[in-house]
Image (tube, rainbow, N blue to C red; front, side, top):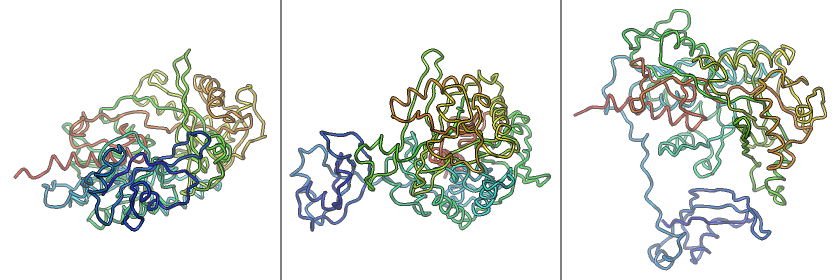
Length: 540
């Protein structure tokens, strides 16, 4: 195949890529057998008034004479022979290569880390047992819908807990800073399980919560097909640890499961589990995270600012943004996080009497409303440096938000104009707040620490200079956002992935402090399982 890089196509072009590739290579259209998109990005810069450009990396297969075309175009730095495909690392895992442990491995948590660890272990023939405190995704979806419509919170089955983890009820973004080669295995697994094939090549791929629910169900069924077992409603309440090693897992009141290998993919909201690990002396350390609010704008405003005259081009995705600010006086940083184009703000509570928000989008991103978290860094110094101090910090402000909303799961909301002017009560919203079960006008300064509100007040006007209209006085901000990442880290060895204090315990994923999203958590779960498999690999 022939690879073409830096291949620009106007966003308003309707010509098929086969035609465009044939023109570029100067061959008849009939000579092109196939064109495969390797990478697609959007260049939103304008050149002399031209429309926005999609920029591709394409692999083109010709019917014949590829070598001759390569020779003819050898001076074109954007044309070369396509490299050989990288072999799948996960596909190489199969039964028979490993010495099965005396007790089957137990995976705690069925979010991305637990899911991919279990998938890898199942491929190796080890029949893992997965314990998930929440319910399967269909039962979970029904419980969340009831809660959002004004029902009772289920503290074990909600936006944070249940099949697929917190990411299942989010935007389903698959972007990550990681360059781990196993990312390809994760993407291919998602595609094989029902995700759109475009996630293979898009620069900012996402699945959307509606499609992701089906994907995680299919992965679960594949794990079970290979001998794994998933138990829902299985809350791990304790571990038995003796002589520095795991001996058993306790589920519920007294269901004891003997264990010598436990993979911990607990997620960033398993506060009771963190407390249990701390009581057992499992090595943990406090970790920085971030907190703040959710801000909403009409999606049309974001499209207009980002795309200009191309804002109505239906070939373009709903526009996003990424904003950062640093206060020169205090050194505090503020930034946008988990930006959800065409989405909604959701109730993401997991504890009674404590309110927290998150953002979510469906695959189509067609709600007409853009939302993002506006966060400020929180360091261990801000909460006293205790291992569980970050959790106490989160709980304090989530409780304040719950109380300010009327103790009925309605969230406190304040317009940007009121927030900056030190008043509250305005309901002249630029766009209706999307949070369910509803909002109450309130003063967000009263449910966030001063260092956060001070930094946000300085950041908002600055963000408006980068994205005009961002600090519109009517833009609603809903509080509070506290679950950006884990507030503590469960220490592990860098090579073996084993807990620094407890043999047989494998902390992994976002909850252990080693990931920051669906992709990085999935890759970390996969790498953790592979490290264990390397340990038990046959030596002969």
